Image (cartoon, rainbow, N blue to C red; front, top):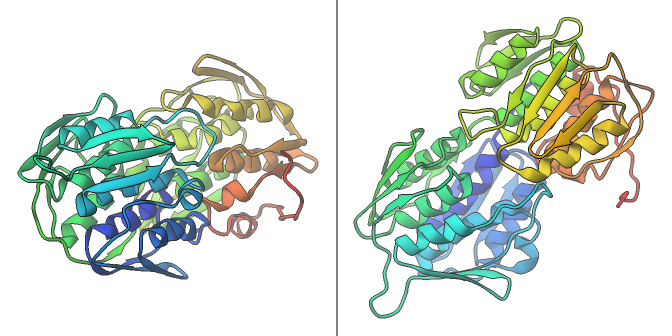
Length: 410
């Protein structure tokens, strides 16, 4: 199974294109709904955006509109990442509070605090994040920024705002995700002076003149891991190409603990499930910990494992609404605060279930593959935002799955 570019990277790279006037080209882009949605956000800022297969071409004007369109921003959470580039380029940004998946509170406090340390004024006004670095005595200046939590979004916004700041910015307790490293590499290609990508400390020497670039998106580790979980859940044999297996070291190790065989193959890995998996405990943490995006897949695996698993959610409290839908499928599961206890059963039972977000939808489909009878998963438009050709790829792997047009369940 070939995996293309990462959803959690491409949208931020598209925002980074705002930092340089001219044409930026991004390749290996996933064919998912969120890419054209992000294109709409950039168009509202004055850019021309063309999406052609796995290539996105962004023409950035000399003068940007610093106020993002509400209707475009409200459709995806990642749109908030235009905040940093707009403050850097325009010295002013007005970004409506973003929409996105229903997985819990994701406040913008750290984004704003970081921008304030860089010298910008920032507030929430009339449903928008407003940041300004213009006026007498106001300018973006390098600063020491400490993040209370290694937030991916805050790291990205502060990083992109700081490339034009005067002096040096140091971001401590920065997010370390491979997608952050991908963003750093693209910014370096554009001319930014950044060091520390992949570590908890990013150092930015501001004031560089940036130029457009052509950049290839890294492979989507979350999609690759989803196919790995599918193999273990169904006792299958799946080879994933296009994803660096080192980005999934912890995940693949856990799947081996569950009884799978894992081996590197070319530019990817092979996962072979053998019989009923063993129960494993899972704890979501910032990278290099276990990704919260894979928590639904871990619960689906635990639901059919031999033994009892505890799943601890430390990132997004709302993700456990997925457990309610798994119970509909016959899972023996309960939640208590940010813990879920799942006692594996030999077989799940089919039922209509509801996808509350991208990853919940994928997890429910994987669970449906090992449920007796026919399982209906509703609101699957969520899945289209994160998984290109989801039905076609699962079918190619041997899954009995089809898409049916129907009105939303809620």
